[in-house]
Length: 199
Image 1 (cartoon, helix red, strand yellow):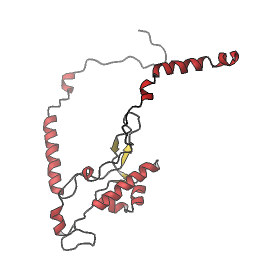
Image 2 (tube, helix red, strand yellow):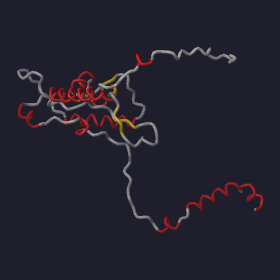
Image 3 (tube, one colour):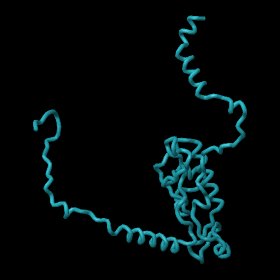
């Protein structure tokens, strides 16, 4: 085989002992079970704190999935500032914060600020130490009243999708022939110069 152009020299080594390099994955089911148990233990340990952290809702970039709201990993500083929550305090009450995140859209910023405000209204802060309570902390009576929940069940992701209104199809729409109208429009666009000359 002749070597041409600026390409890599053919120098493959196929005679390796591949059986020694096989990576097995037999521990996958066991790992899955172990992770699940660890999550359950953590949930019990953190109770009555909510499961998961509050994350901002954003729209996916493509037309196919842009109507479905997705949760990003972290809130940005401007979001916390707009909602009136200090950054360090936000991290202690279950809001995920990242100073690198930027809001490039005013609508999504307002939507997420609204969600943070809603989260604040649902928030019940328990004292870390029973002897030393703050003014914002909840009392023991409140503690028994609130069960442990997921953040997304309390403050669901706000969808930017407009609701579609259903209506009855009119007679004009029923009688409209779309295929013929398209053919007619295509023909008119094609003959636009000739029609002008004829007239």
